[in-house]
Image 1 (cartoon, one colour):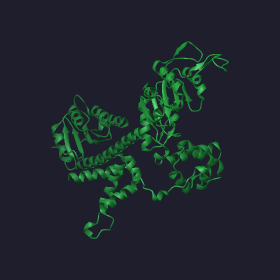
Image 2 (cartoon, helix red, strand yellow):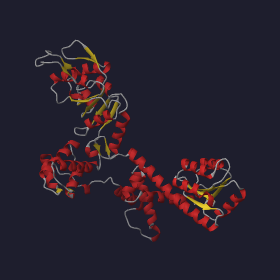
Image 3 (cartoon, one colour):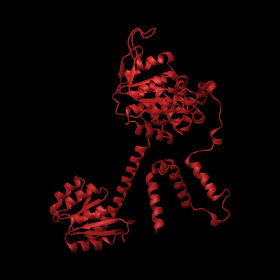
Image 4 (cartoon, rainbow, N blue to C red):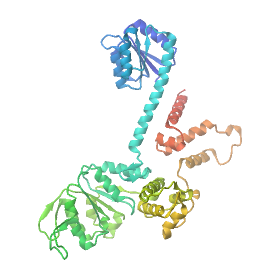
Length: 488
């Protein structure tokens, strides 16, 4: 049975005597030695299980070494590729090196000591290449699924990662989307993101705030009107339904729409047809509906503020936006972004927030969510001379909204350090060790801290490494050492 924990070296040559000689020398290196008498047989071995280093003769029938190593470079780029060559082959070797097909070469006849040194160097290089590839893949996966900015949103909290995923999945569909979330949490930003990522992105995005338009004008705002339809209708006017044709119509605070108008809206959604106010002519349009409310839809239905049949027609896909206080460290990131943005607008220069201001920003409940934070940072930028935004300035801008809260030091922490500390206390006890036999080794403490970090970061190695203040390669190396130790 082959040991797949060891490095694997493959020698390729069409002469059995040379293969046996290479195998004897290769056995002095700590690796599994494999041999192949042809290029095709070598490819079969690599396709079955990749090798770390391949050393191939250059001149072989059917498939020469150059062709073989070019194919190995394509199917297994992490494999370090070396050729055995004569002096008359150097032009071909140099061309292969320049093309990236091979890493190095050995002259025939080879020197055994030189071959051993070359193999050891190649194995070290392969470990570096493999680790770099693993890191690149991990970073690519991390960046794919973990976003700090997304279509107008800023923040990388777990809550927002879920929102980003929902938007990306729902955007390509033609299904209606219903967005819920407290005031100021970014419902219109989400609606715009859905539109931009949809197949209708080249079409119009029309937004109507149902709470901001008087009920007697709402029907005209949605469907439009013809001249003379009512007092003040001095000309024909297109409504949102016409303007949004081929695009998306966003109905914000849908529960504030008059209940009788909701019946007309329901028919419009079902058929795509409507009539302008005062007109008997029916028009048909192609619209995707995106709706939102800051109320619990079920409570709005119970209070007869929202028709149940309309809600279920609009609520094909649901997206719930979290309150700002549920977004962890996003609050500080947003505050820093707003400070930079408004500093530029107001032609001022700020170094950041004082420590007291930052603690206040993190501890305050922000009932107005992102919109409130944005406004407070804007006014603080205007009213402060810098170079730091102080706690007093923010309290002043909050005014009567500000209510002191319990200091963060007295609140339970969610970070990895405190979680690991709590785990250690529960595992090792509150009291110090009473005897030498009960002392925990530093290696055990390190292993537990790393495992805790990985678990709390939901197996995200890159994030765990960042929280622990080390490089991801360090974690991979530690995990590999533990795995090797457990096998031994």
